[in-house]
Length: 83
Image (tube, rainbow, N blue to C red; front, side):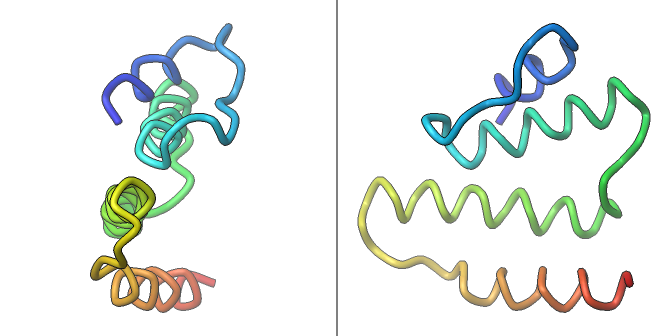
């Protein structure tokens, strides 16, 4: 996530593709947000998105489901309430 954040702060870096982890991509988007000073979501939503990215990476590596289902539900609820 930190590496992605640092890469995202550099406007010359292209957006990451699917070969990067969900955590890296989340960090990259945060770096872009901070560089452009335009957050894409509330702090609470960004925390949920970060937690989901971490769980997705763990699930991808281990092949075992994590507690991400509850995180997805929470994130979905926050997204809908923000509209």
